Image (cartoon, rainbow, N blue to C red; front, side):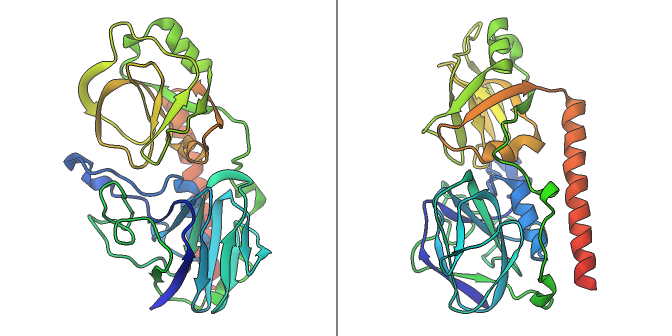
Length: 321
């Protein structure tokens, strides 16, 4: 089996896939990638199934040594990837030979990158997923972030990787994480628990991502929201994208590693299509919210899925030919 050596681990480097959605009824976190769009595109580029495990890196990338010839792609935030010290392009297939080293420099845009290796990372499945959930110490590589000296195995693809030569995304299909765009959300089930002014402030306000943010949730700094009669509710469902407002009045966006239930009022939920843009925010970045309705959310979802389908179909045809 093929493998790479982790020479330096970076700030937070984990093995992820799309998560374990079928176990939320039992209180199991979805976990998985923070930015599903970039992850799926990375896998598609190298001929993988869209849910094959890949490497998620955050802000400071690792240094990885290839022990065999392989093909890989890097998508997501631009963290200045280099192969043997020379800058390489993202959003395209790159070939590495045995002994080559992949490293990263300063961040330019976004904060999370995805490395997809042709064949997919090979780690054991836990509850139907290879995603790392570090808080629970399971999934991924021994339930933890990668460390120096780890050997990360990946599957040998069932096709000749030379068929991937020249494959890259069209410019129009590459997400723009520098774009100053509002984050759209649907009003939540507890809006009657807030004073009207607070709903207006949140819907049109700008918040900053605080340093107290991680894969579980983003704490926001900005306008304090006022409850009519306290923040506590009988605990109910939470999903990635849920926006809770605890008693201090400062919103929290729940992310990939969030729990499955919570006892604070929910002012809204970020639409699925905008989760990748939230995931690429780093502490200090601004988030401006914008209310949308369910019809717009569904329309945007279909649009993204159609684009992904077309890209995947085109790449499958290229492999066959």
